[in-house]
Length: 251
Image (cartoon, rainbow, N blue to C red; front, side):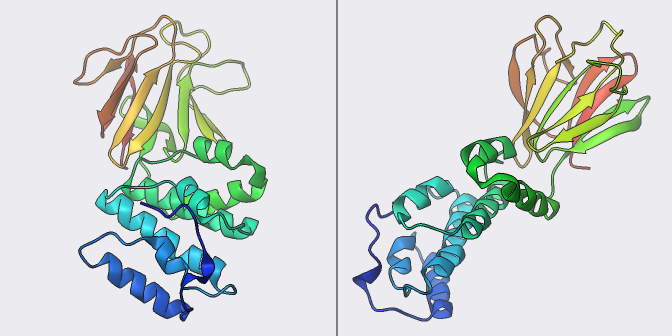
């Protein structure tokens, strides 16, 4: 558990490098250390940097070992010390990387909603963080050839053309989602808003059929009726009619 009342002046201060080594050693022992017991040992001048060092270590160890994994918001509540915007963004990006490598693959949508007050700087830093991570790809396949592909580094929505400015079998991107155009507007086999794909673990996705009247055929699985959603382990193949399908895979 995390301490709810953080008090900096409970213990004598130690060198920041020594503090980090001591914390790593504590994690390598047989018990889960209390990160705030260690942060209390940092000086006022080192406190913010100590938080930037120790909180990501604690988060990564917890998510990697699945030992009471915690969200960043839990640390911030217990810490109760104001962090500079740049420091907070650094911790947010650390959480994004850790949970997308070992955990529940928190989405950009969730982060941008939770920390929207940090604005474009947060979006830009998430872009940089994403570039260093391995994400599955969502690809439109035509006759066995990739027609368009996007990383599953954010929510992916897909459907037929909404207007003529969109090209069939193309993609577009926004800060919190990618959009795939699966077919022409005149094709009645798919809906304008046919499906949504979200990553929920490193090897598992949730597919939601967002259509109001068209089912989806998922290879090797029962049909996904309109309005339903289900979890699937990668790779996943969603049939789109004729020789088209949507492939979600690691490469």
